[in-house]
Image (cartoon, rainbow, N blue to C red; front, side):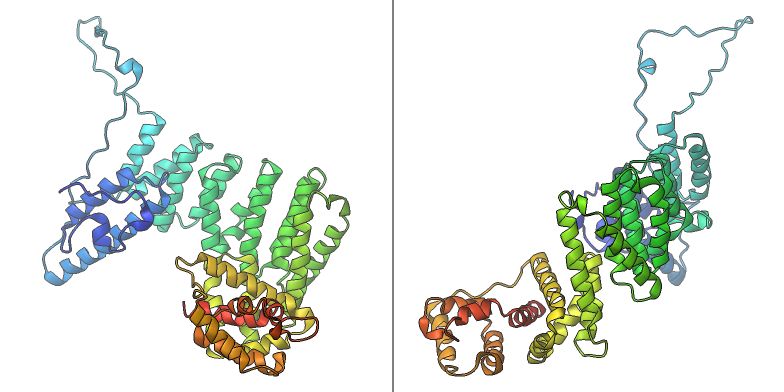
Length: 492
């Protein structure tokens, strides 16, 4: 079989499993196994976790096809035990003592016979490589048992935890009592919350929030490590608790951390309180409300940290405004109900996780732009923070697009089109009549309100009052701008 090379950028790998492994449909099980083994020798799980997962998924998908074809065609497919063994790993680099070119005189016994040489005992690195090779050769259970034994003898070795994690993640039935995330948590406790296990743990509890609430994860809070590292793990755990609305987890964790952090690391303690209210701000039940109130009160009692934590305290102030405005949204309103789902997610989750809720809002606004404009206009003054948060999410989403929508160039023809429209609205009241017509014009002609403002910037004829110009009105008309941007993003 010819050598199959994959792009160094794994995000450009083919999505078709056959192309990824470099095999053709109808491949025999033994050839599939060879292709798979060749790739995972390059993309080892401890070094390339995402690449390894993609390769493993492709292999399992094709293997199911192979087995199904064998059942339907009646031609027997070789079982893993009957397959040819995978290619051997390259031999380990010999130690310096083994490459000594000086001749070795064999010892002889008193009877004159040369004794049988003792086999060389492989070092830990070699044994780990051999065990992983066995795991890839359908001996997962044997490899797992031996790795557990090695873990007991070498409790601080990260490579052992990495292999135990991947084996448990790929074959969870090996040990139903110990999950893949448990191995990460044990390894982190043994290694001081540092190293490659850290990022794997963060990804694991993001994908499976319940894993963050297991006892093994709780024990990380009392790990003998730097307070800053513990605070990071607490923040990740509370994000998981917030998704599950398990507010008591945050309260219990704060009690644990108070003993070890509050007295010695006051600044880190405040950051922990800020991370807690980021989640508790969106709690609706009594437990969450009580905890939120206590955290706010404790933060207010630490004004002397204002100079060092100015940005963080501003963040809390904005959070209080946005969450208070969010609680006042109407749950039965056609648009406000979707905003009520979107706003907490936009504060606590990544844009990837927010996308689905955001698209629902964009669709509703695009379907009823004038209704959306009226809804935004009718928000009370104390609910303006919700509209501002929506605007931040829209801009963030726009910046994330590979090809964000762009405004049309302001050509003489477009300028004339804008002026002709405005001339037809002269003498009409801006708020009551002009804005709905202007929104329809902007959407119809794909002209942003900002372009209309630029067109009339220096024209005194477009004053809407003695002290206000139409361009100023347009640039501060956030409901109009956000409705236009939402429609533009939906149709992009």
